[in-house]
Length: 206
Image 1 (cartoon, helix red, strand yellow):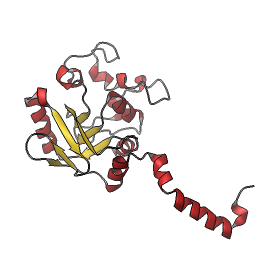
Image 2: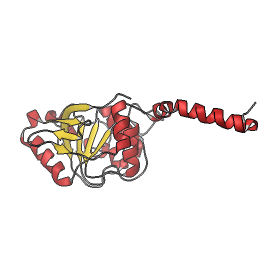
Image 3: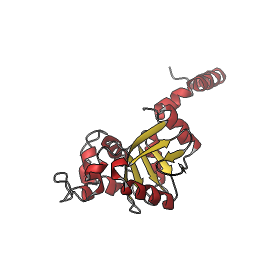
Image 4: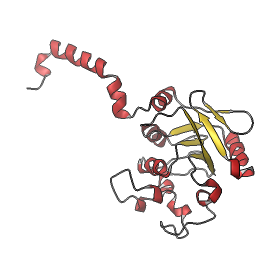
């Protein structure tokens, strides 16, 4: 994964509550086992006029010209609830989202975000609304800077602190996926196996 230390990008507000993984990417848009080719299906029910990938709805916030290239999503309470569908995170990542700012997240969705290099930044709803209002007031300058080192979001006014677990912060700062996390413990794993096989040699397979 690409490490995330400081990220600046266009912010897009989607302040609906309880946006579940089926809203993030409807099941009909999941036609493959690969994590690629999912970006077009992101928010398909809201993003397209007929709910199918095709004709974009110009009123939907992700389709507005001033939000082009958005990489920071401002969400509402309980973002990413519902099923454990990892495709939802893959679709967000392929679209270009790197940071999601919301009051709270579905627990499995939050874990999937971190495992795939997306930052789920916990911010009180009042502060999310303020960030969204600022980006709406000046849509030509609606970029935010998310500093994971300082755990602060910078826009207009005072920086906004956000919550992220220590484990998630370390993984994102270092760009560690699940395999890389295991590799970090390779020496300890080797030492454990050597000690165990010395004490119980019958455990080792031929």
